[in-house]
Length: 186
Image (tube, rainbow, N blue to C red):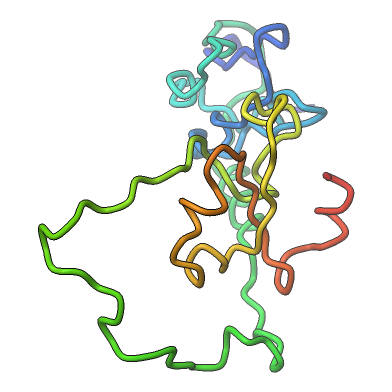
């Protein structure tokens, strides 16, 4: 049996949680995940109880409470984070991103400094990676969503003004991401 003691630990109020996921990357120990559209403590032993995630929650769903729980296990956290780190694989040889391509003369389309103002970003939310956006994200409610390859904003100079304006953005890589996982999510 895992040792238990009274200590500080994160408490997640499911009524307040909207599943936005901002707390997930804020937890350096990886103790929080979005499950079923709500933030969940993966395991008590992964939570250090310091509350670094609290300030990231826009709904105030995270608090620190003192209660009996599993002891914080720094070694288990380290093992979990190491296991979660993706092992880089070689890119498929037919992947266009492995081919160096020159699209035109350097500086083409640049304007003189001060000649005109830079276009404004139309991005109104974060995250944009499809696998990081929970289905219950508030910015998706009643929104027109734009699902695009993650390389498109780099390849299309007018992306913000012509495509992104007034849309909730979701990006994924059709060549490198888990396509079946994206289909299930959509």
